Image 1 (cartoon, helix red, strand yellow):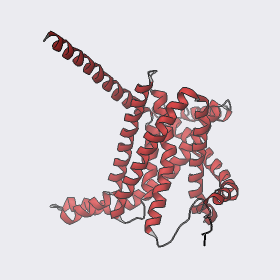
Image 2 (image 1 turned 30 degrees about the vertical axis):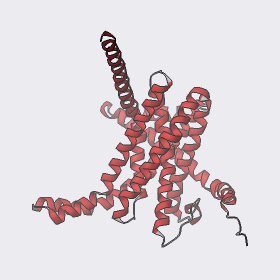
Image 3 (image 1 turned 90 degrees about the vertical axis):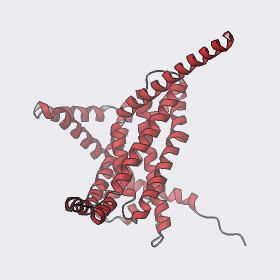
Image 4 (image 1 turned 120 degrees about the horizontal axis):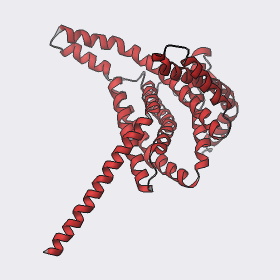
Length: 325
């Protein structure tokens, strides 16, 4: 009996240690996730544009498809890659993030070029649209969203990893997994609520018991399309801001810090030229704007490189082999 009691006591002690470890993982994940809030907001702003224009009944399935892809990105690719790079090749992290940032700059600049110049060549980069084929368009949009999410998720996971206090491999892996999944649920849950607000407005207008609720429903139906267009603009701006800031930060890590230092100094000067209550906000907006302008310029440089060099090379690998007879 005494042996059994001793065994139960040991089990209880192990359970307490395990519970404490779980608490530590949750706490670290929450703190690290908070530090990645900027990239998370960008992710939430970018995603709704990928369901714009589809039938209402396809919106949630598309979001679910993108969310699944995001979780796969984080858990199956980025988590092990981040741990391996952090432990065995930390010097590769900055160049790889810079490549991802450059891709975001290209994506944002491509969309602006298409709107401003109706540049079909830029708009068709890496795309093979099939008019009248909604299923193909849906797959294409989801794939594009998952590619963009991969870059933003890489930034998020890197920020989280950097925010985790020095600990063992399994604690880092657990914290990354919990924070990554939590952020994905928060982002795509928010996106699902945003894109279904107009349907909720229709339901309120049809089923509301009071005139004020029916009026609110009609207001939602009227406002949400404009809000979705605004989110599309915000999402494009977020691509440029995040992409530009990733590249600039990577340049600093590689020893080319003059641009980042100038942007910091200019933003500091602008922020301290206004009343103190607004200093922090104005300084942040100034820096984000300059990062975005750099991202836009870089994206415009990358458009001809991509259309004239990278896309034709990629096309060589996409060509189908002639059918055998």
